[in-house]
Image 1 (cartoon, rainbow, N blue to C red):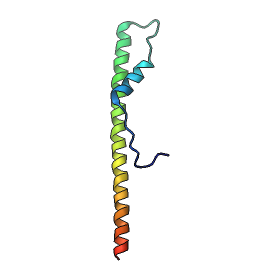
Image 2 (image 1 turned 120 degrees about the vertical axis):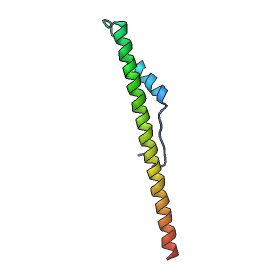
Image 3 (image 1 turned 90 degrees about the vertical axis):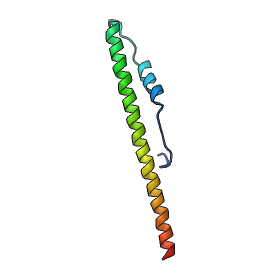
Image 4 (image 1 turned 45 degrees about the vertical axis):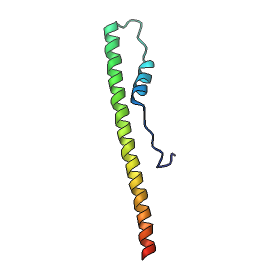
Length: 80
């Protein structure tokens, strides 16, 4: 398991391009259909990667807040 302070982010463009790379044109597929399918996959991959990065940022902020609260609690315990 990764340390709670290890923030992982995706390169949105590279992720979307990798998804497209794994989606070859079918032999009997018309160009227009293939292009529409590729565009749909690209947009979905971009949105998914952005959502992941947003969630990761939130998780990272929560971890930092938890760490900060733990430090504050230790300081308070020592004062009293």
